[in-house]
Structure formats: structure tokens, C-alpha cells
Amino acid sequence: MPPSPVPTVALAHGARMPRLGLGTWPLDDRTVQGVVEQAVGLGYRLVDTAHNYGNERGVGAGLRASGLPREELFVTTKFNKNSHSVRGVRRAAEQSVRRLGVDYLDLLLIHWPNPGRDRYVEAWRGLIELLKAGDVRAIGVSNFKRAHLERLLAETGVAPDVNQIQLDPRLARVQVRAYHAQHDIVTEAWSPLGAGTGLLDDPVIIAIAARHDRTPAQVVLRWHLDLGLVVVPKSASPARLAENIDVFGFTLSDGDIAAISALDRGAAGEAAALDSDTFGH
Image (cartoon, rainbow, N blue to C red; front, side, top):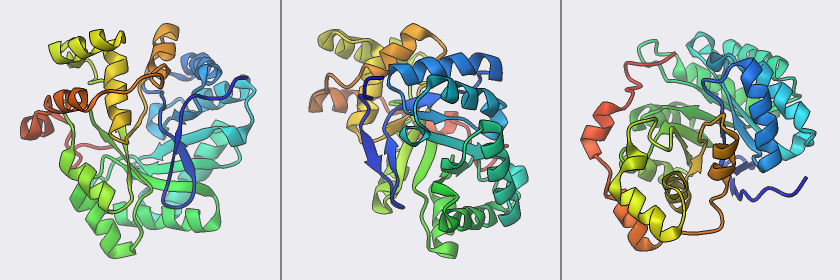
């Protein structure tokens, strides 16, 4: 199998994470197995799943079917609010390892903070214990706002390796990205292509894509990469899988990046996003 074209980024606790991977929601176990196997063959090494996706078994089967050694893969999963305790996190990790059919997890995330339950700090303490024990290579969170991150740091002194958040050019999350940079937290974007919001039909994106002889999706993914983000676009289409990973043969100009970044809707974009103070599973 040829080497992957995807570069990696160093995480704070020592692991190296591919900067582009495969998102797997909402694929089911049956469908995701073939998608994962094909993606690995195309050069994907990061695969992102979650307990709530209900497809960890299929993801694991696809990874095994790919024939690639486990140490060359980077497996991320997430646990839900029912596991927000030190003991619950350990149990969730053990269950995910069993469903995936792997010996360890590369990255384990708190899927949503669910602040109304006020248990996410305990969940974070559980992740810290797993990291210290060597049961996971990296730990992180998903959908955490700055206030949630500040509380983790204040109460434990340990910052996440990664915060996986909803992010695209219209929802650029400038302030939280700045906070991440201050604390050596890698920003990972879910729904990086705008989740069917019409982003890929924006005239600015289309014009830049035409100048580079690339697709709008490739231009948006390149924007993420040129900003230093990690991205996990989702697709079950063989053609789109190949398209999404074929973004390392070009770069955007400073002017391109500025034009795309100017699409950010600021507070309006934030208001349209899922609010992790009120939504979560």
C-alpha cells in the first residue's frame, strides 16, 4: 500500500495526528465497513467515530479489512453523557475498544459537555487517568466552548489535546481557535464543508476553485488545512472520498484565504450552530 499523503500534527501529550481523516456519521455498521476499507486504501489514516454513531463495530471491521497495521492508523471515538464519571469513562473506553476490535484508542473525546448535568469535569478526570495509565494515546473534547475549556484547566490543570468543533468558513470560530492556540489545543473541524448549507455554491468559493482548477470542496478543505486545522469530512461516495484527500498538491494564496475567511458570519453564524450549552447527547 502506498504511503499516505496526509501530514500529521504533534499533539500536546506526544501523539501525532493526521490532519485529514474520515468522518463516519451517519453511516451504519454495514455501510461504514466498506467505506473505511476504501478510505484507508486511498491514504486516509485517521478515522473518526463515536458511541452515539452506532457504527464502531463496522469501523473496526473496515480497519481490519484494509490490512494496514494498527500502528499506522489513528482511531478516534467519543463517549456520551451517560459516561460522565471517572468510572464511566473507563467503562466507555473498554466498551469502545471491544466494539472496534482494537487494543487501544489513539484519541478519546467527551462528545458534548452537557453542562446542565455538570459532570464533564469528572469525565475529564477519567480521561486524564486513562492517559496516565497508557490506555489511550491522546485525550480531548468535542463541542466545548471557551468557558467549558477554562473550567477544565482551572480544576485539573490539564488541557485537551484536541477540541473537535463545528467549523467552516461561514462559522469560523475565530475566538475559540485563538484560545486553542494559546493552550496548545489542536482545533479539529466537523462538518468542515458546511453540512449542506450551500457553502460550496458560494460565488467566492466557486471562483477560487476555478482559478486553481479544483472543486469547491477541495478549496474549502485546503482553507482549513492552510489555517492549521484538522478536518474530518464525511462521505460514502468513492469519488468524493478520493476528491477529499486530493488536497495536498496545491495551496491557497493569502488573498484566497482572506476572501474565504471573510465569509465568516460572526455572531449570526454562531447563533445558527448547535449550541453545546443546550444541546448534547
